[in-house]
Length: 107
Length: 107
DNA sequence: ATTTTAAGCAACCTTTGGGTTGCATATTAG
DNA sequence: CTAATATGCAACCCAAAGGTTGCTTAAAAT
Image 1 (tube, rainbow over the protein chains, first blue to last red):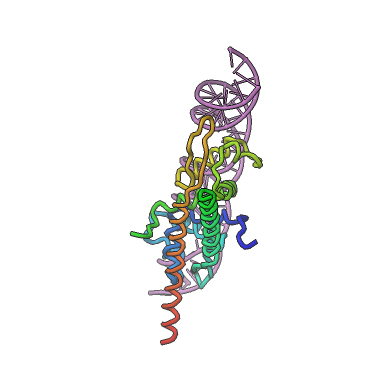
Image 2 (cartoon, helix red, strand yellow):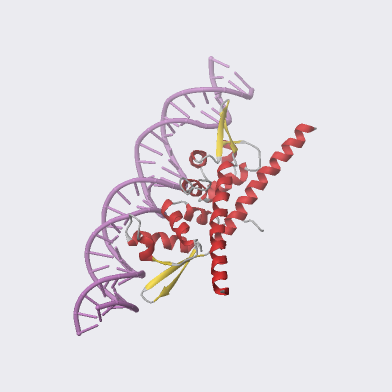
C-alpha cells in the first residue's frame, strides 16, 4: 500500500503546534542549530523547546547529533514528503468523486 | 503573504488523530454522511464522533448541513490544499538550502 | 583549577483532549 | 398520537500536553 493512513496521525500531530512549526521553519533553512540557539528569540524556557524538539524527533522530522557539549538538530524532509503524498491522495480521491458526479449529471 | 505559518497549526492538529483521519478518508470520497452513518463501524460512541467532526469543522476541513433530523457532513478540500502549499514551501526551502550548499562546495 | 555554558533528568502543575453517560429535543415512521 | 431515530447539551473522568523550576553532569573557556 503506497499511501497508508496508519501512523500518519503522529506526524500531523507533531506539526499541530505553533512553536514546533516555528522550529521547523528555522531548521528547514538548512543550517543545524543547537537547543540554545533555537531557544533564543522565544518566550519559552530551554526545557520547553527541548520537549518540542523531542516530539519532532520522535516522528523523524528532525534528527539530533551530539557535538561536544551541544546537540545539533537538523531537518529531515522524509516524513513531510510522506505527508504531502497522503494529502495528494486525499485531494485525488475528492477530485475523482467530483468527476464521477459530473459524468453522472451529464448522462 | 502566500504562505503564512499563522493558523496552520490547528489544521495540522485536526489531522493529528487516527479517528479524524478515518473520518476524512470516508468523507473525501465525495458522499456526505450523517453522524450516525459515520459512527457505524467505529468502536466509539456517537458523541465521541460528533466531537471529532466538530474539530474538523472548526478548521474548515468539513462542513455540516442540517437536513431534517440529521446533519450531513461533507468534505471541503480548501484547508488541505493550503496545507499542501505550506508543505511544498517547507520542502522548497530545504531544497534551496541543499542547492546553496552544493554550489558552495563546488567553488 | 575554576567558572561558564549546554544539556539532561525529574518532579510538579494546569489546561486541553478524547471518551463516556444521562437526559432533553426534534423529526420521521407506523 | 405514539414510538423510534438522530442529534444536541452538559457534567464528569482520566490521561496526555505544554510549561516551569531545581539540580546534576559534561565540555569549553579563562
